Length: 82
Image 1 (cartoon, rainbow, N blue to C red):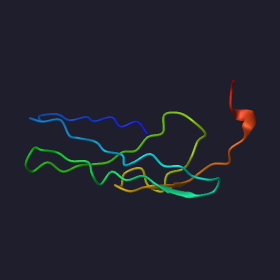
Image 2 (image 1 turned 120 degrees about the vertical axis):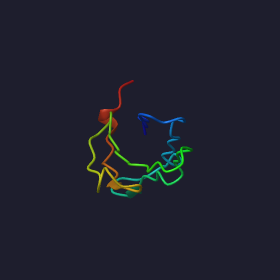
Image 3 (image 1 turned 180 degrees about the vertical axis):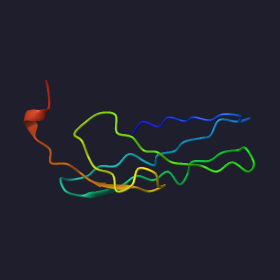
Image 4 (image 1 turned 60 degrees about the vertical axis):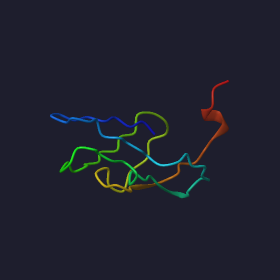
């Protein structure tokens, strides 16, 4: 999962943590977890915007929450290049 941290007027850059790597089977529900992300600037609120950059397209339950979910897509050996 790619995490892009953006901020303006901050003394410190926010720390983005998308959670641990996960292994799943076709059809499993996967939960992304940004709850360990933080901002050292006092009074700053974290906002979330998850974005998929590559791979088989999945639909997030809500791209603007701390813990969105999606269903692991079916895997096919034909989709892997050697």
